Amino acid sequence: MPVPADPTVLHPMPGQPRVVLLKPLVKSPLIEVGEYSYYDDPEDATAFETRNVLYHYGPEKLIIGRFCALGTGVRFIMNGANHRMDGPSTFPFPTMGGSWADHFDLLTGLPGRGDTVVGHDVWFGHGATVMPGVRIGHGAIIGTGAVVTGDVPDYGIVGGNPARLIRTRYDERDIARLLAVAWWDWPVEHITEQVRTIMSGSIADLEAAAPDAPHL
Image (cartoon, rainbow, N blue to C red; front, side, top):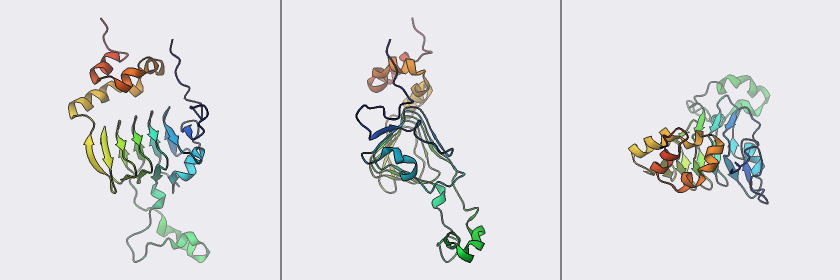
């Protein structure tokens, strides 16, 4: 019987401290990460919460699905980075202290786009940046150095600054089939048995391998 990988191990690759599973790493209640999503960084991958999730003062959350791959330097800019833009100056005077702090009401209630949500099985290239409130669909690929300012569709490939949709990995019909089979929700024991199908099989193979598929 194949043995599943352990989703609670911080460093899943022996001898490679640069790779961390994010679910057992993160402590912030404002960050939710699914099992097996990982971050790779040769300097200090364990500093992900402070070095890669920036201006995260809440209440907006960062939500990352299962089986996501985050390359070195991927950063999420959260809504706390916002400044007022409806007056002559964007400078946040109240944060500097002194009597300026009496005007802290000028910084409350700034507009936001809500939670930043990443689907399942998303691959982020080196140095990609995700702006506040973005929603990234399942199976998407975010190109190296991309600055994602808008939502990314399921199985979309985006790149550039600002990131543009280059193409989708499948046509609409096949994307619907992939979303219906939702392999990332399968029991981990079944995923373990079907790793080769998930990585290199056809959509039809994946459908046939689903736990609830009819078997003759």
